[in-house]
Length: 115
Length: 104
Picture (cartoon, each protein chain N blue to C red):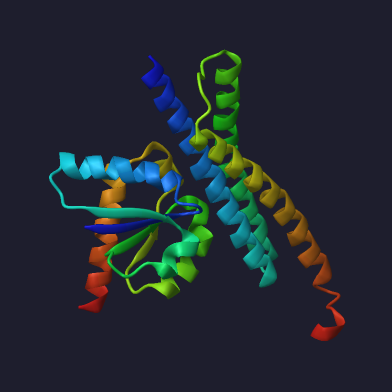
């Protein structure tokens, strides 16, 4: 029984790591697109990132629910690592959205050095 | 087949290492495999045939391609999460074949 629990914990942790990690990668790609003035591309990439993060988020919710029901007997370093990934991923996604908007606003008003 | 698996710190890819090793034993295939973090790639001597990246470091693909002459691929998030060894093995084989095809 305990083994089964651990294997589900591992699968959930890996789902969080893979999907929040992929979302973070996409957010960086979106930033690169914005830097190259492709704002439509950047925003659509960010949407993809959000959808990917959603999968991680659902797995994370499942993890918390399992814990609340007393189904998780121990914290593994992999599950802590998954928490790391989802936290940094979510921050990167939010910041990327802000930065892309800044790039877009700055487009018509280049810095002095860029003139 | 010699595979270098790369992720952020080398931790989650270590899980995949065990699964792929088991797959290779079950399917009687030769496999050398190691998981490392992306900062260690340039320290690694080129003993491997293919580099597979975890989806969380896919944005580093270009940088890693510049550091190695072997093919570099990104594992899809779903395959990575569930440890879809059949598909990951095939992906590695395809990448090597594709690169070899380009050279010929």
